[in-house]
Amino acid sequence: MEENQKFSLIDRLRSFKYAFNGLKLFLLNDHNGRIHVVAAVIAIALSWWLHISRLEWVAILSVIAIVLAAEIINSSIEKLADVVSPSYHPQIKIVKDLAAAAVLIAAFLALAVGAIVFLPPILSVIR
Ligand SMILES: Nc1ncnc2c1ncn2[C@@H]1O[C@H](COP(=O)(O)OP(=O)(O)OP(=O)(O)O)[C@@H](O)[C@H]1O
Image (cartoon, rainbow, N blue to C red; front, side, top):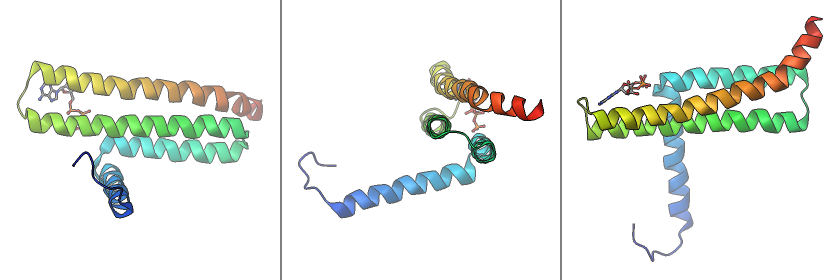
């Protein structure tokens, strides 16, 4: 795209359309993504059931968004890597393993936040 192109609302709306198409592709085709979406739905249902505070909602929704965004970027890098090098390449291994590590960090954060928010009320219901 040209550097000095005029601002166009139509172009901005078209970008949204492409982004929503990416979201659709992710939800329909990405197996790891589906697991994260199911986990997100369970976390939201649990939050509702436990009547968590506004700040806890902010924490839960934030980690859900971080995990999904990391998974989408990981999936995008995997697809690009498969085009660049369909056969085995040691550098592609590093690229894909690094992208997967980003998802792992996000997932660990989600686990920690989930434990901090959900464990105390669940333990008090059980007792
Ligand atoms: N072309 C390649 N060259 C080198 N290593 C690769 C290559 N493709 C995959 N790998 C290795 O296999 C691992 C898994 O890659 P893959 O693309 O199958 O990811 P995945 O998480 O199993 O994705 P999905 O299940 O969505 O296909 C990578 O992290 C990397 O270590």
